[in-house]
Length: 197
Image (cartoon, rainbow, N blue to C red):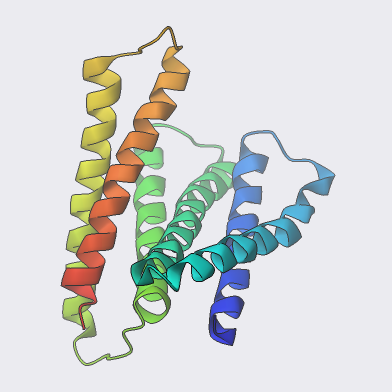
């Protein structure tokens, strides 16, 4: 693993920690010791990527996929963090304000995702067609969003809770199924369409 990878991993862990604090504070789970997340999350991310790097020596794409997943965690933290920060700042959590906040958080997370995936995950440093590339990135991301929401809705709305699980737990299972489906599409789309070499 290169020195740049270690620095990037630590920065991404910090980003997750910072934005997670906004989420927890908005949800009423803010404790004075939460600052420790700023130390724990980067270390956990580093440990996880060391394992992925070791395994990735045999399966080359695994290390790249692990980097993509870490960037995805950071993107989710940016998305939820911006959303919760705006809610915390204004006290508004529904209606048109919520839709506006969600649009801002999606744009922030997508922009964050573009730069991290371009320069770190897929290491594409060519900047001659950046506008076209960003539009491709946005198109792949929007298809990923549709897949994510579609699969989650299929699981939650059409299948409904299974095995005696509560609707809240089932909603999170549906969200996880959607996230995994969208994750696979986004990785393949970014690798073979947007950042192809």
